[in-house]
Length: 323
Image (cartoon, rainbow, N blue to C red; front, side, top):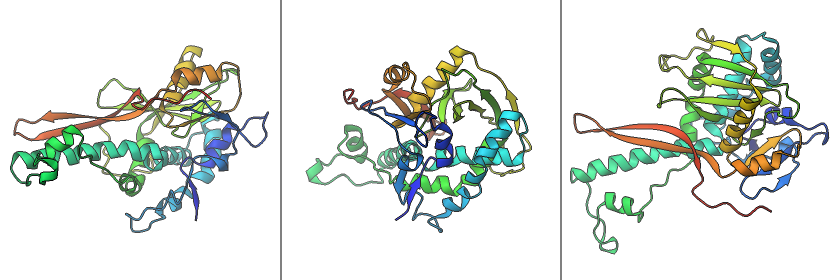
């Protein structure tokens, strides 16, 4: 049985600590347990890349073979300004993979699907297209049962993963044709964290959009700004619309970027240097994660338009006490 990593080991190894050798520091957000794993020990699931909904259940592994060997070289190109098509492809592919196949991604993509099922159920109920529930459930409508929590719409997380796998080339084209902000960080005591979901989100000017913040290495991060005008139906791996600028963040901005990285982590935060302030910083921001959010908007024709996006929000379930 394959142990598949949903965050590439080549990414995690960038955060290895000189004090630990081939290990990195880690904190689990739920209980603040600290430990020092190897890259191969974390962010992995048995057969995590296997998906029975797609024709080739291991197709995503073929995609990763075109991405992961180029990752470290791509970072060097971003550092030196020698950015080329191969560099953009490697980084955009990494972002796409995490955004489609990690447990956080599958959870997030399940939210809009669940909203769609609930909306369709309500529309069918309103038209009398569904029978009443059995006597054991009081003959209530499906809409009422969902609203009261008697029935819950469950989405197989492998289904949104399959959608992401099928769309992985288009996602890579999309991220690679957006505008990038390369964020170098030479502050020795404020290097970037990473996590088990290293694609943090940040509010953009348009409420329909979010920027992506990607920590690539302790000294390097990326902000990807979306563009609604880009044609997502036409994959362009030559990245003709790609633009980037290099900007050195202030210390206050570095703290804000790390705050987003920690808050958007699903369970685990990783870092290279065990400074005294790190555990306190993680503890202060651990009670958050990314949540899906869908607005239901009535249309003039009596239909319903669903607008789905993501938000950084407080966790619904209480956290365990610190260990």
